[in-house]
Length: 79
Image 1 (tube, rainbow, N blue to C red):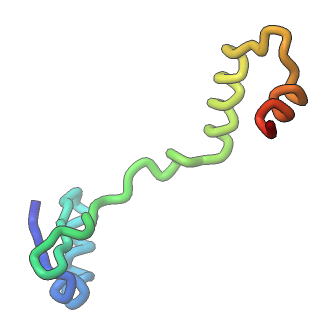
Image 2: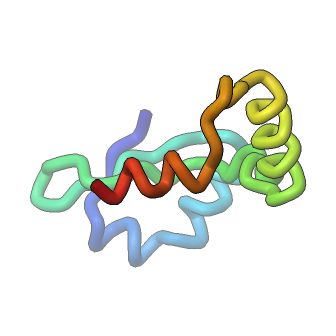
């Protein structure tokens, strides 16, 4: 993985973005210490709200309260 200083990264950002768009990852350093990774954007639907809701509903179907109710759980948590 290529390493580049922060100042140089700022100066050559368009060139770096071109490399990243082809799948490369670049480590950005500050005074020789790695501080960030510039990489391709992947899975733009990873945090889609509809998918999150679907997964939450699947999780809920598998869990049972076994006689407890939500109000009692909330009150217990406040104690």
